[in-house]
Amino acid sequence: MSIKQNLNHIKSTLPKHVTLVAVSKTKPVNYLMEAYNAGQRVFGENKIQEMAEKHDVMPKDIEWHMIGHVQSNKVKYMASFVKLIHGVDNFKLLEEINKQAKKHDRVIDCLLQIKIAEEDSKFGMTTMEAFNILKSEAFSQLKNIQVVGVMGMATFTEDENQIKKEFTLLKTTFDDLKSHESFNFKPETISMGMSGDYALAIDCGSTMIRVGSSIFGERK
Ligand SMILES: *Cc1c(COP(=O)(O)O)cnc(C)c1O
Image (cartoon, rainbow, N blue to C red; front, side):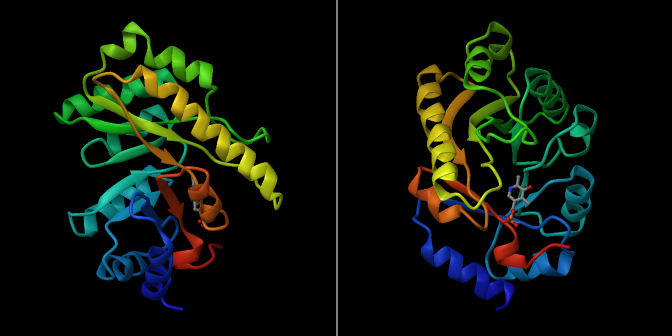
């Protein structure tokens, strides 16, 4: 199937409240343009430099999402254009994003990455750490970022019950954090679900799925 057919197929299965992020990491610009020409406007990348290079040459009405692990010293390379940063897992990083966003007179949307997987290889903070950030005085000073929800990655396993348990944990975390809504915490997004598990993620409350290989084909 073509990229366009893959996209149309996936979109036909999605409820209206779910946003599809087309994860285009490692794929060439002509693949992304095929998705763009099929109507896709939200793209996700996991390396800042690759995202910046693609941003430079592609149409300007695209929403660029950073879905990978972010190093503080590289935030400056995306601060002028990034729409949403999914993987924010510590307060220092929020401060750096705020600082760089301010230079461009922007407010950058962020998701707090919550550790839901049992495996140690996945990044993320605990619910308690997220709570402590959101209610802190220091967080309330950050005028150039807005936390709009949470993101999580399930354990890499075939065990659907395990994945379901982890997705449910992220949904519960989101619901618990909601009571701390403030001027720069506007909870509306739960980013969970990838090619192999997005249907299950939506059943568990996902509002944003990050799908790569089911659109663009397997990565090497
Ligand atoms: C690569 C990646 C995806 C997409 O994975 P697929 O299995 O290709 O859909 C989603 N989320 C993150 C954080 C990724 O790094």
